[in-house]
Image 1 (tube, chains in turn brown, yellow):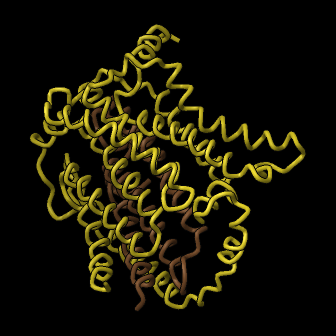
Image 2 (cartoon, one colour):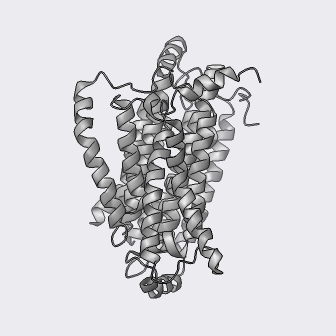
Image 3 (cartoon, each protein chain N blue to C red):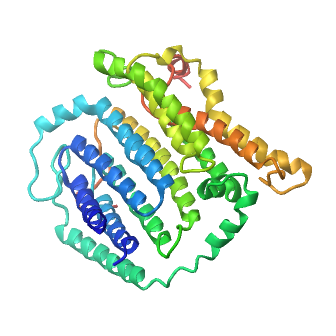
Length: 104
Length: 333
């Protein structure tokens, strides 16, 4: 198995773990962490696919992933600022209408 | 080297699982930073040095710092809540309260569905046709007219400059959105939390000029080797945030108008260049022949300054308190 395929499969595992974590966590900070890991997994997948084949890898997915990383940090920053406000207003790190029986 | 690849490939998902199942959020964030750094190593192994730099600086370090900033602000209350709540049994434990054992069958079903998705993705991956490299060849052929000699920079700031323009627009929007949330810069855990740490303060005084130099080098080097505006901006943002954390610079001494100007500078310059060429009848973002390198350098420099300010402004305590007092006078509206 070539290194790119190895990393591609690993990134699939990474994003699946992150997806499961995102869907089953109620703590908001943990969900934002899961979103970040999900994004990282997808980016790694894109770069791994681009690294297949001989010669220098295709630079366009690299530029795409670079853009994605930057947008991902701005999203995280906004999400964390919102969490800060939620915590200041309600004292909890979960959404108020999170039902124990399952997702809304 | 395959041993390193195998170790990385196995470690990343396992570490991610640990990140999402540890009880303590602080430990989760530290593990998250470690995962990010491993991913950066993976990018380096996949011959993507630009992406590796960006992931290490922005994806792992800056994002991790944002999380730590948040945990530091709400940390004391978390401690109290954890002491007063009992830990749950079996299910994924969170930092506080009991995680209701809601629908473990549902969780199992979700796990099965996700595993199924994984199977489909893995099958799709191993049956991918061999790459033809069509677009990569076109990029290679167009490099001489791009103004720079590094392919990723050429794609980011010339061939796909439109995407980068929108990207910096998103960054500006995020900064404006975070600022308009009016987070209290005088809250505990915001602002100069580290000013009593003598080692850090003295180390910062030495490190910060070095970081500014590294940022300048990364910016300059982006034209012909891995580097560029975003990596340089991230290092600059770390330097600015270090200044604020150690109290070497106080947020209230920073003029809000100047900060706002620096925030907008990158986007404004980029937009001006993009639109300016349209005055001569050329399509959006078509650099005039012979001027590509100079324009790219101008845009990248403005971008670096803006990104440095924007990413640092996303931390708590980076907002000058003057705007908070302005807000309280309008509270009744």
